[in-house]
Image (cartoon, rainbow, N blue to C red; front, top):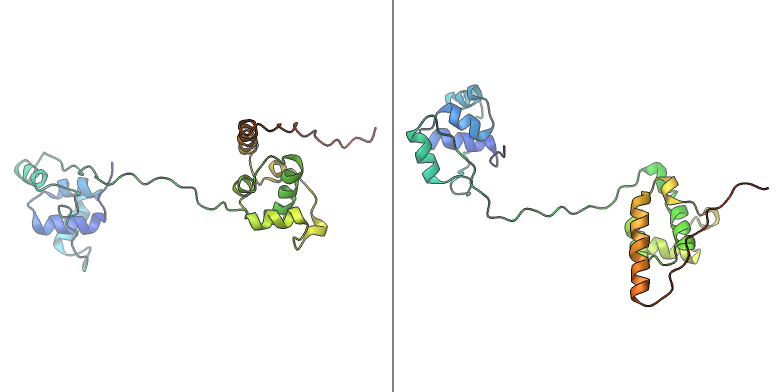
Length: 192
C-alpha cells in the first residue's frame, strides 16, 4: 500500500482537523493505532507541524467526510496527477580495486571492436571520452603499463552489454553502407 507523504505529520493534521478514528488514521498513514493515540495524547510527535493532505492532493474532503460518517470505511490515497518519474541510470560506479583495469579494458575494445564509438565505449566502461582518447593516442599517464584485457573478464562490463553495443554498432555500419569488421579471434595461450 502506498503511504502519504510525511505520514506522521499527516496523522497530526488528521487528528487535529478531523473526527476520524485512530484506526482509520493509522491505516491511512501506515502507523500503529497506539502510535496515533500517543500522537493525539501529545506523547509522540511533539513539535511536528501538521501536513494537510487535502491541500496537497493526497486526500479529498469528500473522502474524509465519508470516513467520518462511517467508522468502518477506510481512507484511500488520491491518485497522483504527476507523471511517474523516469528511472534514469546514474553514473556507473567502478570499485576502487578495478579502476586501474579500466584503461586495459578500453585498449581491448579499441583494438578488437573498432566499430564502437567513443560514446558507446564510455557508456559501456563508465568512463569519459577524454580517457578513451588518451588511451587511443598513448598519452594516458599510465600508457606504458596498459595491456589490453577483456573488460568482461576484468568485471568492468557484462558480456550481454558488450554484445548489445557491438550489435548496435554493426547495425549502424550496415545502415551507413560500410563493411562490418569480423569478430575478433580469441588469443590462445598455447605455444604448440
